[in-house]
Image (cartoon, rainbow, N blue to C red; front, top):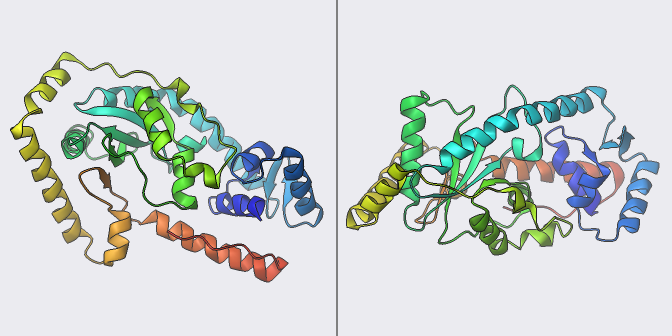
Amino acid sequence: MTILKTITYFSLFNHPLTKEEIFRFCKYTNKEEFIERLEELEYKQIIYNVKDHYFFEPNGKTLQKRINGNKAAEEIMPKAWEVGKFISKFPYVRGVCISGSLSKGYFDKDSDIDFFIISEKNRLWITRTFLVLYKKMFLLNSKEFFCVNYFMSSGYLKVDEENRFTATEVATLAPLYGKEIYTAFTKRNEWVYSFFPNLEKDIGNNAKEIRKSTLSKLIEWGLNSRIGDFFERFFMKKTIKRWNKMFNHLSDEEFKIAFKSSENMSKHHPQNFQTKVLHRLNERYSEIEKTYGIKLDKEYA
């Protein structure tokens, strides 16, 4: 049942959903049928409604935590826009989006401002190196307001793993800078609508255009050459080799998911969050089947 799948997924993060949010992330396209099914689940006491937020178990602390997190997210957004603008000035950055919890309207003391960055084609690893060096040299490697762990090249733009986790992450991206490239990204990932057919299709309208500084333009001009090609290959090989050495405890399959890296993509997720979330989600599905006799199809990475 698609409604239960939606509520279950967000319950892993103790994040109760409103009726509109559930509809946005489920497969029911008929609103009347959706409401009927939602009310049926509530009547059977499989889910509970408290102040128009739906839970498996009504919990005032969980709801208050979400309310506080929503407020904190609103307060931190100006900072996110400021940092996003700064990132957009770096050479070869073509798009900047917020990802992670903040993109879902939530922020707390344990949260980071996560950024999803789209680079120029064939310059992803130079882009990443510039940003990581800045973080290490000027921010003392702090990631609180400058977490840059996912890069994609404008020459590809396709998220290869098509599952509930990646669909949710793509669907909730909040574009800040690079409207044109974000529009191209959404078109390359229309598979997301097979998971969530009710998503808005004009979410990128708030994204601003990127304006490069003279220095950034000069750096790009200097690296649009064989020298740039050399450094691109060098940084990619050097970084992947270092990751292999640092995280050799991961299996080959786990490493490929957590550190998916190529000429077009760089993902640095040491905790392998995607695999852990999907594993926990399938465990919850099994619990629901055991408790309520409702079978939910498993999710796969």
